Length: 377
Image 1 (cartoon, rainbow, N blue to C red):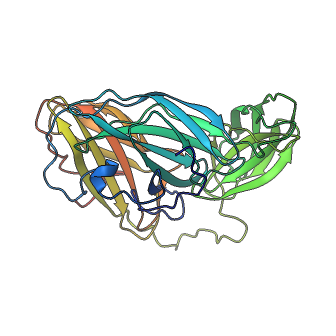
Image 2: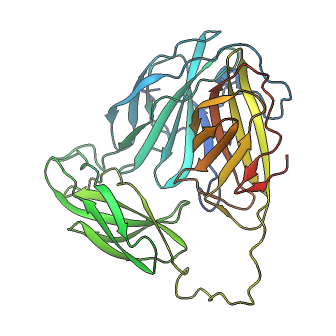
Image 3: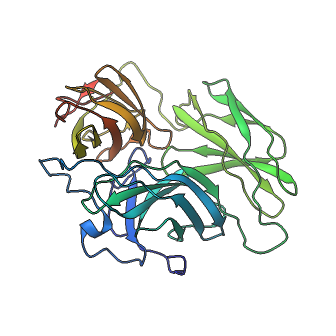
C-alpha cells in the first residue's frame, strides 16, 4: 500500500459511532489496502458476528506482533514496521493496523495482507499526533492481542529548513486540582533548532480541543469551566512544527461557565444510570481466550468515568486489555476507562478487549456492572 496516495474511505463501523466525547464511543472505519471493502469478512480476518452464540473452540490464536516502530513520517503518511506474529493453530494470513488521532477520538483500522511493513495514508494530516497498534489474524479468524503501541506526530511540511518536531513537554501538573481556576506547570521541551512556545489546550473529553494560549514560558493559569476539565500542552518551533502532547491533567470544580444555572435544593435528582452489557468470547482454546465486553448507555445522560466490574465463574485470568486499564483480584475484575474514552454518551457504546488464560469452561459472567449499577444483558 506504500504506493497508494489516494485517501482510503471508511467502510464500516467496527466499534460504535461516537458522539459527544469519544465520550467513550470509538468510531472505527475499516479499509483494505486498496481502499475497497474485502470480498468477504473472513478474507479481512474479521471476527465472527457478535451475535454468534457458540464460541470458536479451535485452539491458539496468533501471538501479538512485536517491535512495532515508525520508520518514516511525512505530513500525510506514516510508515510502520513490525516483527511478524508467531502463528498459533493456523497460518497467519494478515494484519490490522489500528490507529487514533490524539484528542480526537475517531479510530481507523486498515486491513493488510501478510506483511510486516505498511505506509498508512488514511486520514493522516500535518501536525497531528497518532497512536498505532498492529494485530494479526489467521485463516480461521482468530485474532491476536495488540502489539506495543507507538506514538508519532507528523511534520507540518515535508520540505524546508526544519521538518523535525520538538520533543514533548513533560511532567504537566495542575495546582490546585479542583476549583474555579488552576495553574499549569510543565518541564521544558527540546528541539533540534529551538522551542519558540507552548500551546496550552483544554480538551472536552470527546472531539474538541480548544487552544487557550501560546506562551513562551512553562506555566499558565487556566479557568476551569466544566465539572472535569482536561488540559494538555504541546511545544512548537519557529517552522510551525508541534510536538507530541504532554501528559493530560484533569481538574474538577468548574461550574459549566458563567451562563450555567446554579444548582438549588429543589433541583431534581440526576437520572439513574441505565446500561446494557454484552460479554462475548471471540476465541477460546485449551488454555486461553480472547473476549469483548461491550457496554451501551441506554439512559438519557452521559456515563462519565465508567468502571466496569464483573466476576468470572471459573479460573479465567486476564493478561492484557485494550481500551481500558484492568485489575483482577481472584475472580473479580475491574476495567476502568482510559482518558480518551471516559464518557459514554446516551446511545453510545464502549468495547473493551480482553486476552487471558483459562482451563475451566468459558462461561460469560452472569452480571456486568457499570459504576456499581447492574446492566441488562
